Image (cartoon, rainbow, N blue to C red; front, side, top):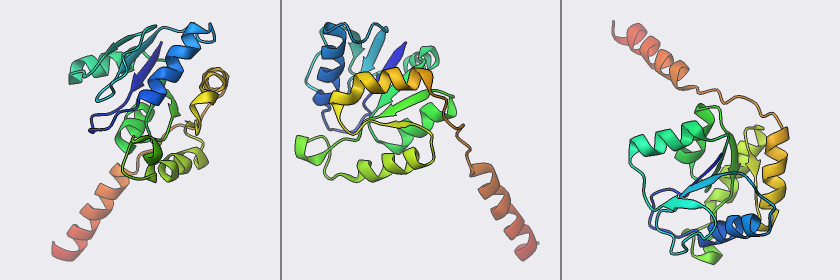
Length: 161
């Protein structure tokens, strides 16, 4: 299953939803697809969707998914990577009214350099992206949160105790 998550910020991402609908309509994607569409105006015709999911629904969809297609937000990407999902990230672009600037291009590019996800710059490449990630193995995401907390704890212990 493919889970599409577009985040909770007040920006539409109709371009991505339309591209997925077109792939399904053209017979280029036969996977089950479910999308959390957020503030998008477009309502998919060929796959199930819900504007907003509560935490349990979101976790359930993410758990069922083999592939997560998401915008280029840090939280959405890291959340999927931590669950071991194959991720296709499509950066939101300001020229389409999807965000205030194009910072997601850089962010997704950095995750791509780390070989953690597929960076889909252009929605017309989405079919190829889906085929590619099904066959490709990505590096596992390694959080440095534990190391960071240990370093802070060590510093406090050495300095104040």
